[in-house]
Image (cartoon, rainbow, N blue to C red; front, side):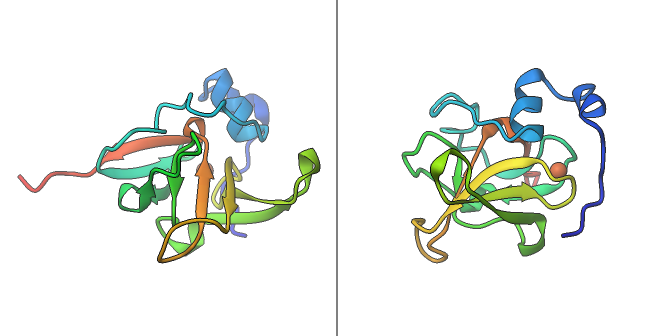
Length: 135
Ligand code: FE
């Protein structure tokens, strides 16, 4: 864990919408099929809505049918923190932004090849940055 950014909830509230604050800073979940990036197919990277860290790449996004943006791997190995989550009577693995601790979603072992992992992520925890074209 290499937490670089520590802010109070009041400080985060200055730069996030109430929905982003509830999900990314208070471990909330957006309703399935409601998020802006669920069916989104842009070419680029997904960054932390809180701190801007690059977390996922559109090259690893796939349609899991779950209703949340799904990736089979993070943008790189060291950008995601994982922690056991036993809330709601389930044993799940929570995933967070390594830099600021933002709640992103969960990772499940039922993803596609080559990793077999499914990172199930809230759109509200992400921002999208389009890849620069080669022009
Ligand atoms: Fe972050």
